[in-house]
Length: 329
Image (cartoon, rainbow, N blue to C red; front, side, top):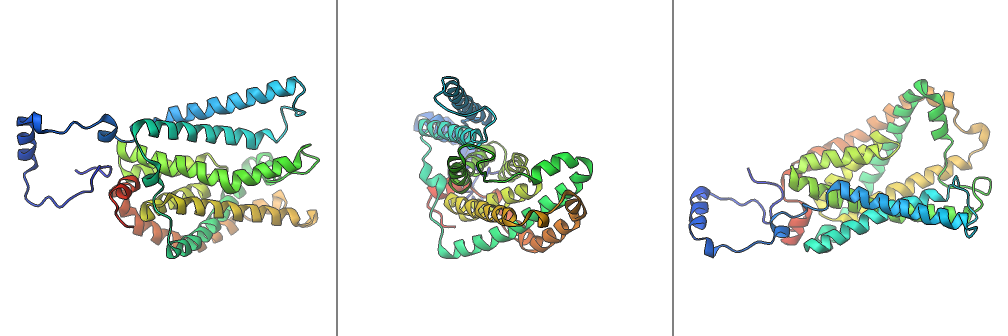
């Protein structure tokens, strides 16, 4: 069976006897071209654990430096200050991404075919509609899963509901810096770094090791697990992965991710702008789990046909190789 990770796309071999050709080539080894290991087994490195290790080293190193500055009274922060959250995120995902790019450079893997072409206007319009639909599903999945979880772990769900993306002077002495870093993380860093890692790296790494379908599913599940809304963000990860296979443009997927985060920021600002007496209570959230099912039911008629239509692409050459060969989406 042809692998979905070839250096060249599957060809119509017709009645060509591949076994005979292989025997002929082996009989004349001097005529064979030496292939560098990086070309014969692309995306063999870095392994996922090394990526994670690089990110953790960067995160712990950043935390260690910040703690030294705090002890030396050069940084007026407490260890519990929320400002450490965006800084740690940038160090973790930024460190993993730098390790990834460095490893790709050593292997001769170019970033241009990995990111692919800039999206067309038609692609952009369809992606916006898909993003809005996926966001509706994500909100519904959060309402459904956490509405049911609230009956089992009400304190945990109540803590999640009381979280906010942006803080004031009561929560941190550096609200301007914290909120600025959160905007940077949500609208720039997270779309770029997470798409480079989850869609750019993991899909090619696992697609070459196993197959495209397994890479799409596993990377999407992992993407959902690493976010609080595991069902909604798992679906988003699946849509982003298939959209990347369809358009072969990581730029488009980054834009979709950023738009999704921008809508989440808008919802957060809207909820925090409501009066306290109109804010949803835990009891109302528990009773409203069914509304999440309604939202998911609204979104699925758009998402399911898209998944069914694009799933066969998981058996085709991965975006990096298709872009290398100049194939148009």
